Image 1 (cartoon, helix red, strand yellow):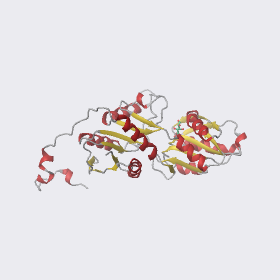
Image 2: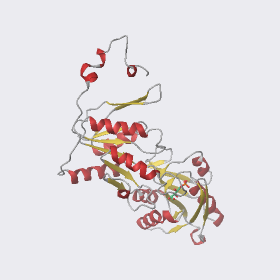
Image 3: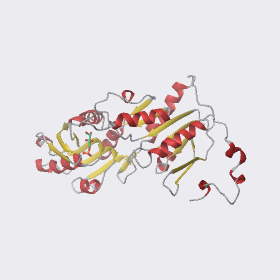
Image 4: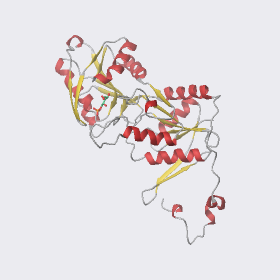
Length: 331
Ligand code: R5P
């Protein structure tokens, strides 16, 4: 049976995913050694089983090595296939060298993940200059879309909505959501001056002043795009907006600053956050189940379990008590 293994911080999402798919929830132990290095131990039996590591990649730098170690450990212990379920995929925005000498981190990140995992499942990655994840990732990547879920939330919760995309890039989500719920939509124009400085220009929205504006976007990262858009809408006589995003990253104090100018803020649970109201696990579980069925007859060449080394064969207890190896202490 498929095993769902949460990396730290992803326990709730992994439990919901396992429940939604009727799969087993696996266990992993991780900690830091006193010198700051990472310890990883897979506690569940992974032999000959498909294993899904659940690890959303918000603020990825702290846990990235841990994820790679876990993926490599699961493979070396004989898992038949190792999938990364990352509801939010990081390092999608530095996809070119904007200034001489810059690292193109989206490519490096994709190569590192592709070298360690067999498959990636994610939701609405920030594809801007790349047409699809296959342009970056060399492993199969399943890209899921949460806009229909946002639309269903809006139609259930908001009376007479006006769907608004805060910039040209969000046109794709705004128009898809609006057409699904039969509401009008508008798109604003954004000029970005830096990581934390954007200007937003509004078209004439006065004909919609009786409607409830709903700002929709794929991501609230620094939050400045939504804060600036939300700040401007009442200047045209519209009520404070509801903000609905797929990935609520909300760096620094941006959530509090957006709360000050918005009527309500909601997000999917791709990033754990108080604004989460839209669960993604049913979508992800059904995608995994259907790709499982499609791949049932494929022949795979998997890495065989590695033989036990001398220490593992002898057992840790065989070390002389006067000279314990350093990894037996330090909890
Ligand atoms: C456009 O580039 C995206 O769809 C988002 O609008 C943008 O990434 C949000 O970034 P921030 O929250 O930092 O303004």
